[in-house]
Amino acid sequence: MTFRFRLDPLAKLDGFVAACLFDGESGMLLGVLPNERAAPLERAAASWTALVQAQHRASEALGEGASVLDEVLVRTPSQLHLLRPLSTHHGLVFALVLDRREGEGEAKLALARLELAELEKSVL
Image (tube, rainbow, N blue to C red; front, side):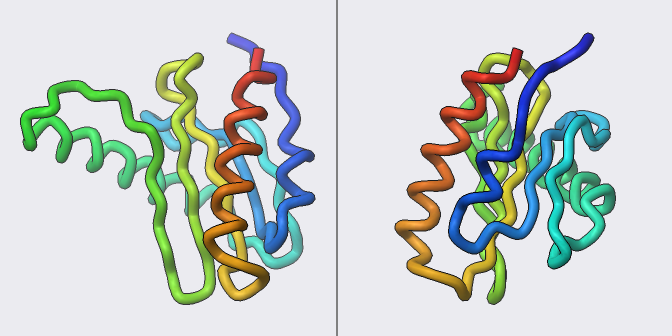
């Protein structure tokens, strides 16, 4: 299966560090938009995959069944990691890493969510 998409619009976000599209079941990267401040995204995608899978198991354990995951937000002292599964392509997940110390955190997060929603529409 072939996908067409561009991660470039995410680079304009305040505090952008890196972004990728990955398979939420295998951790395989399908597209990457790094910059010089980004850690190796291959290792990060493997960890994010485990996190997404754990969240699915937790939802099932709480009696929510196989609910659709909207997003996962991880806050570290220096970064925000926003994981957004694509509703249009089961198993695929956008990951966006933002520098938490630059700009207004909540406003930055709101803009990032909007940009990811728009980007999802462009994935063919």
